[in-house]
Image 1 (cartoon, one colour):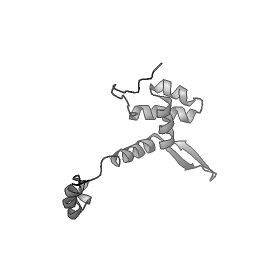
Image 2: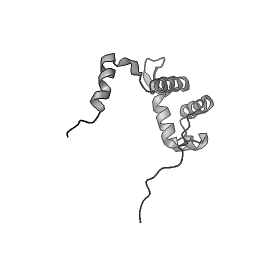
Image 3: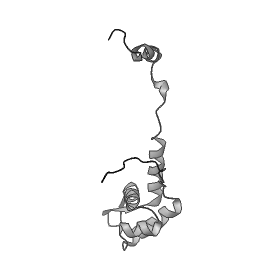
Image 4: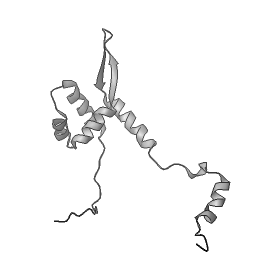
Length: 113
């Protein structure tokens, strides 16, 4: 049996909305949901929930000066936005003019080889 590794379908990745993040925050605070149950409730995959919980995890200090970690939806949205802003292609203007001028002759095939 052969395996077809050709991927022709368009990927259908979707990010969580602010409403879904708020619902996730409430479910995480209650402590009664597992990640798979949260994912089913939100209509997303379990790895999406896992990444979002990791992204929005914030260290908090209670009134007895004990630290604990808690998911905060606003924090997760902020980190997601920062990551998206940094994920685009870098500006080509950072290369020097001398580099760009020398590039075509160095990319051309060498004669006599």
